[in-house]
Image (cartoon, rainbow, N blue to C red; front, side):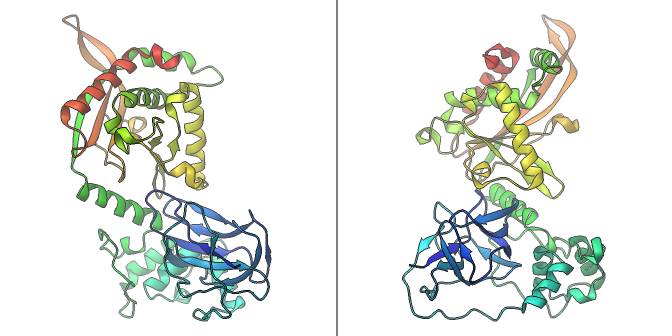
Length: 406
């Protein structure tokens, strides 16, 4: 019985992705676990794995096409076998796993639109990436008119943006098949933004328009934490402020379940998303079961996930299921800021720099290392007093951090 290969949901915010290219060819034997294709999501370039064995008997999409989550991409079966493709190329409800959904066999499958010849595809692949080719099609731009600045004359996204800026939007540009759910993109340059920037634009607009935010800020004495970071700096596994903050958040969230995604009914495990900056946007990998990890283990895991984020190699599990988020701009010298809640979550903590500041101790002026943190919360779920109580516990943990090291 033939099975369908579908576009997987690879992150919490993903609704569509760019099908980059097939790695296997029609007629080629496939074993379960083989890499079939590459998909460019709003987060990274992902490898699409086969969840069934057989022959790749048909492909429904070509490289460079943008498709919705659940869209049927191709069929795996045996020689001479076909499947009912009435819904081929149409979105389906995403399954928990990528790929293999059983389909009833039928004698014939209607053919999709004619694909480019292998020579044409090869020439286009050499000239520009799938993303650049798709954006050019959406703008009605002939890539032959653009001189590439990349290696061996390859056309980059910057070349496309520059060309659009010089020529203006062509009158023959084809309209989008359907308007996006939110439309913050209006300028010529933003119209050719990569998927990650488009996804960020949609997510933050959705967050700001649908979640009633309120924020609460506290200043925390970090002298004790500063000493811990200094002491561990020369050891094989140094620990930074971010790991201490994440560990403190995990402990506090156990006592404040309304601030976790899913509320009291959710699992007792604390999965914390943290922001990682990239040149083309921000990623939010997830450290799982933070309440079970030591500070050193959180430091190691956050470093591993940050490296994978910047390389665009995160897995679906590493990008989904966060209970709470932490965004730290302290390394950029930012004292205080307000972060937007990730859709699907209840709160996010914005962390500022640890700086030497004047404080009053025992009625006298002194200098201490302090850090300002701002909690943004969903007012539908919690009130100000609840958020303030969470911050009070977080501050207590960081001002007396010995318990975080046990």
